[in-house]
Image (cartoon, rainbow, N blue to C red; front, side, top):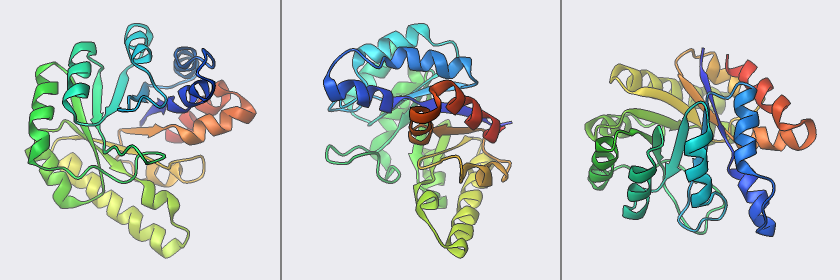
Length: 234
């Protein structure tokens, strides 16, 4: 049975559109947990376009499951994470001009210090990377605890032959991740139509899903949206 991480960034995006106080991401996290979320995921970006520092601090104190903080591997973010101590930090690439995270992190030796510092602070470290076998081996060498495989390409493909080829690539990457002793996670672009195919691989421990859940919630409510996705990943 896979775990469901619910990303609530877009609740904060709606709040920041008016720079007001609603909708409240803290309440969204509570609703998600009450309806099956095993983890709350947020991305504290350098430009603070959605999630704010206060959200991170309050969520750390209030959520009942686990807190996964997505962030760039900068000195500022490493210090914030080391002080707040979320359960997991997922290192992701970040560009100011992008609408959302585009592609996996290009891991290199420069990430070793960030990973080491976070682990010394008692935080599990995950890296968000492409389903690339060499990159996964590098993640192990850098001492990452988990790999979140970027599923964005899979989510955007239309031709069945291309989809199947990408699923095989993802599966091979997941098998290697597990073999190397790291937790296997999937995320990006997953929705109510394409998640099941990855669930059927029976290898992912966790799925991190945000945009499709919040989009569905516009019409059906957040409680139903989370519960329905939870039933899919189970």
